[in-house]
View 1 (cartoon, rainbow, N blue to C red):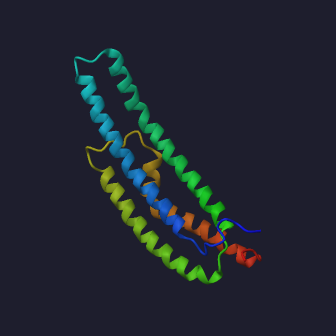
View 2 (cartoon, one colour):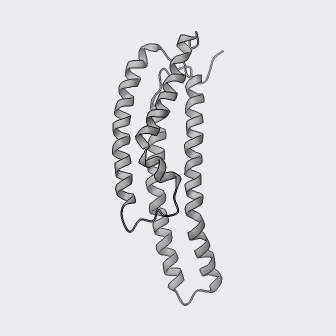
View 3 (spheres, rainbow, N blue to C red):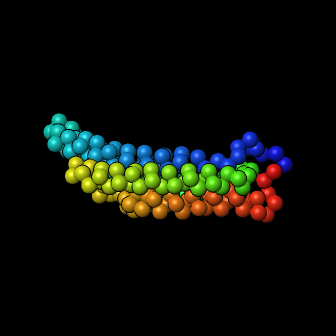
Length: 167
């Protein structure tokens, strides 16, 4: 049976793509909530606007944080499922294990730097993170999540070679 991924051999770079996507979203969400909070403050202080518009702005300000936090967690879960399923589909030679492990070490170092950068952003007094629960939890443990996802991915990639899968 020929798969669409037949030309890919030992792709661990998907983990880097997912880590970058999650980190960018994790940093963007608090900044977006901060902008919305400042906008809501300006709307609430504007005497020319109606009570209905102030009510809509206030509801959007209070609900958007929870919605974006949940959407980020959904992206994390779906990306994890996609990586593990995709790893079973890709044919991989066992010789790529060394390169995969070296790449994982560099990815864990980068994950530690990104996790520290997120904590610096989160600790800023002007950044709104009070309505977020999932993003701070994962980003405080970003290295552990990348490591666990990497182990899942490597197991899925290289167990096929032990049981006769692959090419």
